[in-house]
Image (cartoon, rainbow, N blue to C red; front, side, top):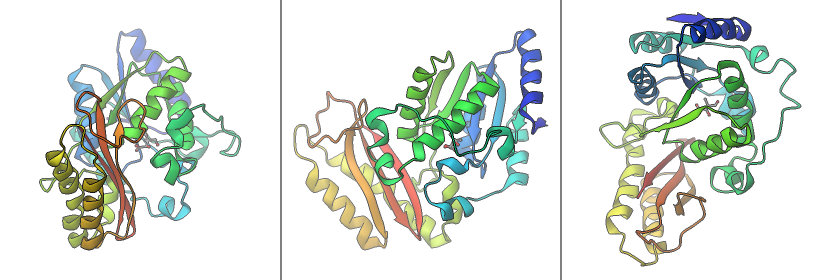
Length: 282
Ligand code: PAF
């Protein structure tokens, strides 16, 4: 695996490969890699794409500075896992490579209601930061395909919107959420949970699955949502930012479940001070 830290060198390398006919698959990450990330690499490789992964913990997407400081960093094991998965190149830029003119005057993207709902509501500015870094990475890498995990459901929608705003030819490939045997969605943040916390966090997916199994066409789902919230709070989850049934197209709240309207159950909760998200498309 080639490791580059400089964006100009990376662009030169990519141009050489494109001249030889290579198509590029790109997996942007913030490191602390788990099997969910590795499944994105494997998906890209299986499509015969020259596969580039980036690791960059982007400060502009953290609305909470302590969350940024505590973000897990496991670069040595990340490099080993990426090599094992057959990654062709790891891009490991520093702040100056991504934001050569600083972070203060970055573009603002017209994301519409997407950035006011759910994550947008609880993490103001987060999606602007995600767009700033992904836009810059796309400009550098110019991939044919961009691979993201469905665990970050709203982020996938935001980045699809970004691709439209940029009139980009890059195709977004959304890959299924990988789960632990317990059902807990794989996430870099899980590393910060205690052993007991990790066991307890499995309740998130159990609550989503339980609501799904009890859904009856046209019936109001508020009671099921309230029951789900009580189960989590009684188990020791500290806070629930949201647990909602929303439309897959608009992310707007659906008070009743209609099987004909594609919907997703979506959740953000705090356990041991760590914010965890998950979703279950219906
Ligand atoms: O999902 C992530 O890890 C990040 O939000 C991303 C897409 C790498 C941008 O920093």
